Length: 343
Ligand code: F6P
Image (cartoon, rainbow, N blue to C red; front, side, top):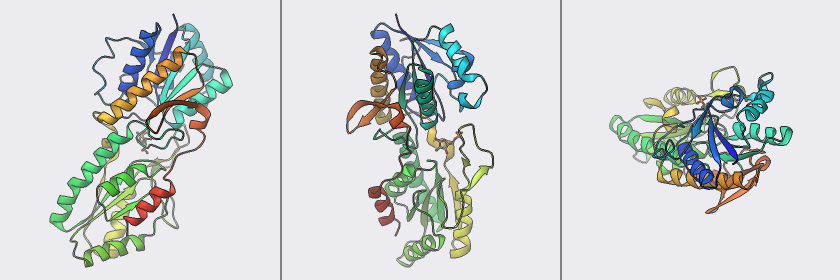
């Protein structure tokens, strides 16, 4: 009887438990045993695990977060960690791994598969929706709905006070969350990392809308934007173990700049981790479930080195290295939408 492990790595997102539940059901139905490694690659290194079965994975489809825990551990940045992962596999008699994560977690999975011949299947998750080779990642739909709901709410308070409100959303270096939140939330201006920001142009649009009779303004800004002449705004200088800056703070800076240049009373709201919390939408539950079933089937068929992906409405298997090769940022179509709705 094959024994298949699963882990969830990187930032959590709604829908992870749907994958765990569906993969467990598929694998056990196919005659495999299932175990969960705890807290991402950390559990693979330390050997911390839990048994997974139909009982402890029932009724978790609607739960946010991950029952396995997660971390941003990079085994390639820790002396001896890759060797320890191999020892964990041998000691726990693991025959294959389903790694559920974003570019960082799946990047490690790709290296372990290519360099160490560890049998791995990938499942793409992230609220940022920035993974190549899949049309959508689960988590994104929930995050976007939270962001749009927040923008809707902010309209009423901004209107009552005749203020400008800047709403900072996540997404790292991809503007998917901002584009959806800004356009669906009817912002005056949407700012995305793919298009450098000219603050005078932004203020020009706000002034023009006031001149047309609007008494308040909404600006949606992705945390990863840069100004024509500037750098990212970051919370701290150090990079994490995958080499990322910790973004955050652009909303405050923008609010100050806008207030100074326009004279409009301006406030900033940072949505932050609210976007990753809580119950997944039906779309994310279904996508996570379909990915989990596909990953379970791939593991049973020993179809290693691949990732479950959504293409159109089909779930397919794509090579892991294609999925992690390049970030999926806003394409021309979405950039022109953002531009059209920010004038
Ligand atoms: O990648 C998902 C994400 O939520 C990004 O949008 C954000 O920049 C980052 O994770 C935040 O990471 P952390 O939870 O480690 O602060």
